[in-house]
Amino acid sequence: MGEVAVGGADDARAAVDAAASVEEAWATTPAHERARLLRDVARRLAADREVMARIIAHEVGKPVVDARTEVDRAAFVFELAADETRHLTGDTFPADAYQLPPGNEHRILFTVRDPVGVVVAISPFNFPLNLLTHKVAPALAAGNPVVAKPTSAAPFTAVRLATHLLAAGVPSGVFNVVLGPGGAVGDALVDHPRTRLVTFTGSTVVGKGIGERAARQAKRVILEMGGLDPMIILEDAPLELSVGAALRGAFAYSGQVCTASKRLLVAESVAERFTSELTEQVRALRVGSALDERTQIGPLIDAAAVDHIHGLVEDAQAHHAELKTGGQRAAAGPGFFYPPTVLDHVPTTARIAQEEPFGPVASVLRFADEEEAVRIANGTPYGLQASIYTNDLSHAFRLARRIRAGGVHLNDPTTLRWDALPFGGVKESGVGREGVASAMREMTEVKLISVNYGA
Image: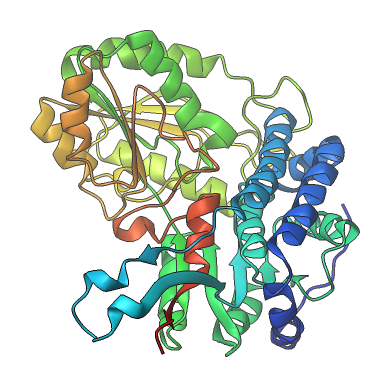
């Protein structure tokens, strides 16, 4: 596709210094002016939709029809961030309601939200534009300069976003991009004394390492990490709806989504029919080039991803899981393809039931009753999202309260996400929340101000 400069630790430190030099100026830029610039970025992204989508398809193998949706969402996130500047407010308190300290009858108490400072944004390959935007737009809207370290798998997407920010008039130093390996660039950004918050999306192993480094300097983190999201299909579930949701949830972008439906927990009484219908639809999925408008399943990100997913499939079979379709490496040729795969009777002891697969595999785990379903759903270190399919919503509400996850969707897939609303996980799936308004609150400091008007 082209060439980009690979940075190192010195480049990372220089980028932070550039951001720090404009920290006060950007923080004191009126919110309406920051909002105007962000809306201009949104318009530029919308106008550049086709080019951006094709860059994403080329870089990460995402089907171009899905890449267009990603660009649309990214533009919407900038619009949301611009709107949210009007609502980033503090609270007022009735001072005279407190007996101590003395003199409260002559005081006014209120809080304001100040920008936290230089934000480090570390983003993954699977949504190279939208997940980067979910870090950049809220940070800029809240008055924080940003240093971004996008995935090395998709540098051109990040660079093109940077050109739109510059063209919109975002001042020099407010948004910076450093491309390079995490061990050099990422560590330097996290360790720099002028960075105050790190927002990261990626694997749990890397995220926990970032959290440890940031804690040494008492820095804030927003960590959106791995998931092993369960979709629970109860015996009274609407079968056609749940099969279609499982197809989308497990195979969208070849399963390379943190919220993918990686474990399909199906009631034993309907499992045979559910798996049969799912397998039939999976066999009909069209595998091909990301640039082909008809493609539903594109390539994986690299050869290591193919090796990883195939190893998990082989391990599941060794644990007596039944292979219904797929499971064989693609014939030699261009592209890191792996066939859409369905496994049935997957035991909880199989690696694919305990490790995030990140590939086009639907794993069916059967359960006998609700207690077993809850035990399986909660039986991993992860807790990002979950979904429950049933015609009995009162039952679904009760079950949802027992699932340990950041989001539980009833009769909707695990992949559901609202860009405006809180998003994140529990346990080893995350710390803090994304979603534009939530992220902006995470990216600001609460300051209490008191006014003594009786002095």
